[in-house]
Length: 482
Image (cartoon, rainbow, N blue to C red; front, top):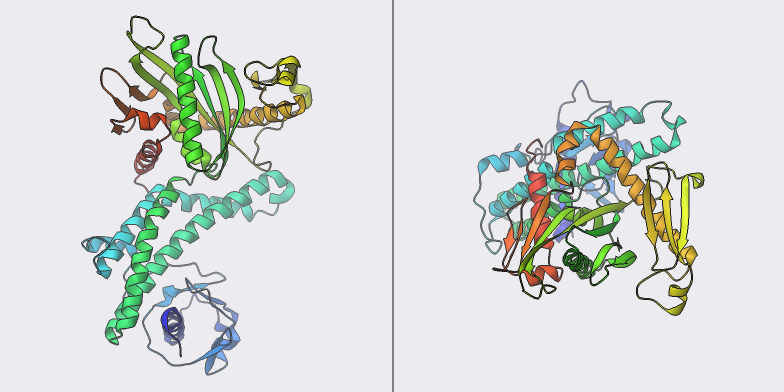
């Protein structure tokens, strides 16, 4: 006898299947003999012969009789492979996620055993996710990509075809995940209604628990929707450069770099120092680290801009208050198949020099450091932290490739009006955050007005709230999601 989740699947399978079979055929539907049906959310696939040619329907090794309640889930449970497009998910009585939102069911604490409260909270999360994914724009983009994929000459250019195919697959994956989450919500609501009609307390309890679990997972999905950009899942380079102000700014730049190292380590990312130019007295003039890990770029991109420090200078005998600046750049590390600029060896100027700073006898006495200049663009990259010239050259080439890719992305963005504002926001002259250590203590993000009164914790790498606040506000500005 079926119990627990298996019983829910049995109810769902029977009612979906036979309510569809009992519905009169529509003129635009394919013939039943030419249809292959997929029940959304259940994962079951049915050959037509099993549907039309016997009194029982096989699912795996189990057989179910061909009779059940009709009308529990309407024909939107099915997606037909062929010319029929998928329809908006709904319950048996036509309730959709938008309908749940319009009902404005009160959202109670998670500890309250109220299914409407759980359903309303989940529906609101789906609303937020769609807004952050720019749902309407996503659908339009998918349609454009689908047209391009259907062109017979697409694979005449394999590189372009590969990019189109990957983007299409990525967008389809995001859309299917949201649709599946919607469908799961509506199926649990249907199960609750069925359980109440049949006075099945166990089934109702199981469905309410499932809604509660969905509600808890929904917040994680909201966060994932923040990181839906093309390169958000990539690792990245973080570069910090001291501004005007001599030793003060160099010391501040080293503090900022230390902050990012500690932040990355808190998240379990791998951190490698690629290049570092120390200051004459203290701090650094500039430095680059490589942050390895999933979504490192998606999070770190929120830090791009100028960071301002106000404090009593430890380098001023009069203990006067000083203002220092450091600029932060974040560059995604694209995979080999995603690089935008092909580098020709003939376009490179490679210089070798003796490494400076901390290091062993071999590092400091041989010309192991490498600086590479891309002659057509003037972009440079250097590395002196590896033990051999070969390793330094490989690391410098990785940095150079990332910088050239970013330069190409910026060039393309300038051609697109919708990116103009974002390019302005990351210019050198724009301060994104102020850190005040004297006469009071505070760190404030000037883009979101989010602030904390404990700058020490921030400088020790606790910057997640600043990052999430910025990502959330940037994405939620766009209300065009429906």
